[in-house]
Length: 377
Ligand code: AN7
Image (cartoon, rainbow, N blue to C red):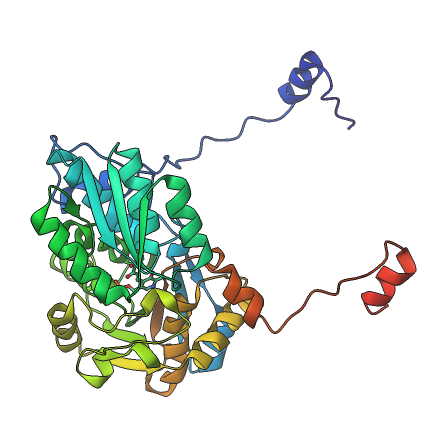
């Protein structure tokens, strides 16, 4: 049948012939606070500042499952698909909504990049001023672009994230400004919803949860979420929490803070994690482990996820998959493993271009034989 869409009348006539589809029962996603309202510390008095974050896909990664074998099923929680491209949006919708409820006019955070992007977006949506303190030269390009365009006041210090965190904590004590780093308890309340989503999707908790660890806010938040769902009877077991750090920034592996953390995964270039005690408690309670992965291992997982599974995450996020592959012999047969991909690959285009093992074939004249030759025909 030839379809004519060129006049409104014709288009309407054509569509009249299309059989009516049954209504889908797919409700619009209202954001994570509305979805999980009974499990979150909000009330009717809380103005909900949301960009409809959450509801991110849990995607099977068969090539990675195959590398482990023995019936192990690996899935990734792709939190890079949140509104500002990272899991931080989950915490920020809560932190900014509560700040608004408490009448805050300005918020502040220290950040390796993603927190600043999320804080900037949500604060602006909530009509607040936002200050972000970042380590000069160690924030990925996409994250800087976001903070600037959202309209944050960006202050780059000649120090690392840990120095920045010390400063913002003092600022928030001395001035009328709300701290929205993960020391703010509402941050973790929001972030725990990722665990709810994983259980809602799988129908149970996974056997293992692999997650990159920087300040250890997210590992603590996931554990809170799994425990809360377990106590509600929504899952019949709790996962083993496997936290992975970059080898040059691995205070949980050395057992003490590190003065000069280094890694190309700048998101987790953190030497003195704010949630130190919480993270150790999670490890103990979940019979979990902390392990380190080298930058090389992170890059291999980063390329593997993109080139074999079609999933582009940022380097820090790939630490979860790098870690899983590193300890794959420890995974019980038939286990279900979820790896958290905390941030979107577009956050750090420089890393992709520098480490993709691939290159552009350039300088080709616009002639078919030359293009065909460049294509290998
Ligand atoms: C992509 O943005 O600390 O262990 O300032 O951006 O909860 O700290 C980011 C951390 C993992 C580590 N993956 O999470 C910040 C910041 C990505 C991240 C982590 C971060 P936590």
